[in-house]
Length: 213
Image (cartoon, rainbow, N blue to C red; front, side):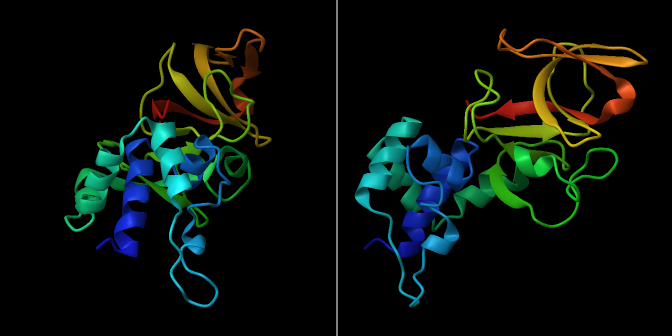
């Protein structure tokens, strides 16, 4: 007999396998972003809530997964496979990243307010995840995509990076050139012109080491 915990574990694991938060998974499947939130799993009266078959079918289609694979994830819940394969990585949205209190002067994650997403094989213990919202970063990243950022990694020309300016603008770009005085950032989308910024206007810049695409 299936348990409430097993079903939700399988959904959480499916999201983690694609480096998505559960809200990102829901958005990718065309569902309300709050569909799989933990607050939706128990009613106000304390009764357990179950995901419906339509929502499960949609997330399987959105991730290219089969029902057999989903059943395997259900059975994995008793073995703790997710904890074995992955560790939690701090997660916030791009909009939150532009506000104060989430990063130190070096661009390392600090403070409260972070969510978590499970991600395997992250060598940098300070790595964190940013969830894309909206379409401002198309075609490089879509709404709901998660990028894993390594603030401790060296940044070289041609790397995909996340940069934050001192006025709070956060952007995902390609590092084209960096000198002692300026930094040049390019977009994959040719409709967006290159950005040439004085180095003193950059709060921090960090390399993207993985993205869910």
